[in-house]
Length: 377
Ligand code: SF4
Image (cartoon, rainbow, N blue to C red; front, top):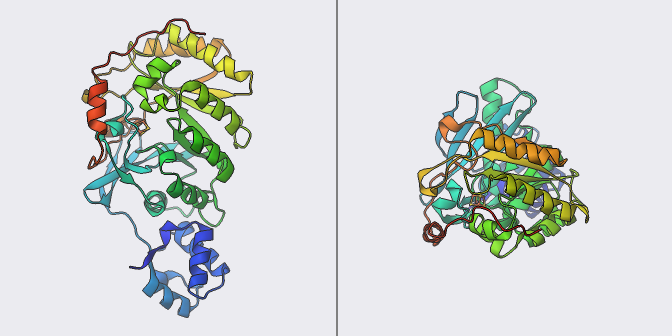
């Protein structure tokens, strides 16, 4: 088996080149060919010595992920389904905007967290993606789009690790992929424009701050533990107080001076004025220790198995108003690509569930959601 060069960040590729008896700077040339120019054929790499190209042909390859399908939305959003083998497929979504192009990338085939409102969570979990499989989504999308738009300029300016999976439960594959995204010889993305979104894996938030601090988004979705335990089961392990303390610590290394809290608006579940006031109390409590944050309210994209409904627009606006009047920066996410099931929480791919996640979620559905907590703050 030859090595898939998409599995390496630049340091990893340098070690690989040294193993071939080559100088480390060859890795920089090779890395640029792969990531900046989208090359997968060693014969294209004209500034590499012929002897190195011959060695690479027998010891390495660049493994693109087969594209199962591509759907383009009326608003320009594109969703790809990539085959990752063994009956699993993962999705990536490109979201064009006037001033940026964002790629939403998957980190796992399925997800073991099992959030109640998330289509991926309902699919169960099969396996972690490798670094090469994470990077192959960006590698393909960037070079496909350049060809499609007939440009040599960079098209993808932002990456959000918000596709299928909990990225911080696939930490060892995630970090080299992030490093390749940030590397000036790779995609050269600014740390502020690469976002890891987590449901709250507290110890890994601390490690990310040390190893590769990028922008952080946290799926909050509830203002108190009893409700969040039900919506985001990981909360039972890392409850809100611990999570918000980790967010505050993260700000010491973060490239942005705030954490984004994602809040999916669920009709009658977490969208009442009381919930907004409880959120304000929660955030104020931690602001004394240095927490700074923004809220991103996400209109829920309903799917039948969830048994949940989207909050009416007026309620979302009323919720946002309460937060804004308390001085919290709050945005309501525009829904993009919902005509191709590419909107937030809709990514399902194809996953062979090797866990009991689906059973667990089915059991959770029998537990009634608590509409409003007693005033706990
Ligand atoms: S919201 Fe994220 S962490 Fe929760 S089930 Fe979906 S993919 Fe997993």
